[in-house]
Amino acid sequence: MPVFKALTIAGSDSGGGAGIQADLKTFQELDVYGMSAITAVTAQNTLGVHGVYPQIVESVVKQIEAVAVDLKPDAVKTGMLFSKDIIEAVADQIEEHQLENLVVDPVMVAKGGDQLLQDDAIEALCEKLLPKATVITPNLPEAARLTKVESIENISDMKKAAKRIHELGVKHVLIKGGHLSSEQKAIDLLYDGFTYYSVSSDRIDTKHTHGTGCTYSAAIAAELAKGNGLHKAVNKAKHYITCAIRYSLAIGSGVGPTNHRGHRYEQ
Image (tube, rainbow, N blue to C red):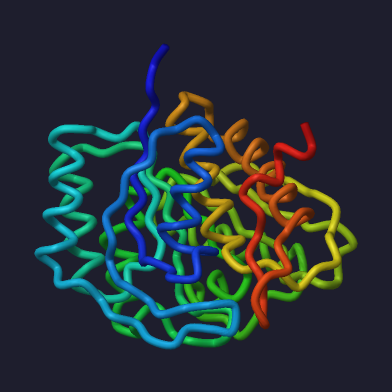
């Protein structure tokens, strides 16, 4: 039986709901062997981010290198990269080791408003990393920041943003519409440069959505690692994250995490 492997390059969440912890839980649930390269350590819980401590660039490079030369991943996802220097180093490692099936989750701001990507890092993200990506998975605030617009208010705005982000060199753009409260469904838009595809699910009335973006992108990476095409990977990941939100965990005093075992209850 083959062993599929996925590498997450992201920050650590001490509360366990997002970042490296969410990614590894997702990989495990989807029958993929998970590996990690930690870009930053955060002091974090359901109430917010209480500290961000980035790794030195050499540490990030050595982690990726160690995995790539011995346990070459079938897919890679990036999450919180924090700085221009780390982004450039990650992009160089992906190219050097010819790592494929790259899912970029452009983590910029935590739910509580804490900045997780420095302002001068966005240019490096667009120029260095996106041209190497199979798909980028911004939510609406991230897509607005990448396209330098004030806000994205409807499906038409999502289509315009997807086109502009695609022009940065990424193969596919998946804009997540969870913030689009005007829609009855949670609609995500996948764009390949020619056609727009919508992926939707029921909206679930819960505030406990910490780690949603990390988990969704990790699920896409896991499905790509198993050899699924992008459309199938996105559809399966959408089902996975919907279950994780439906059975989210009301723990802590703030915004609780999604439930990475949620898909088991659907089964």
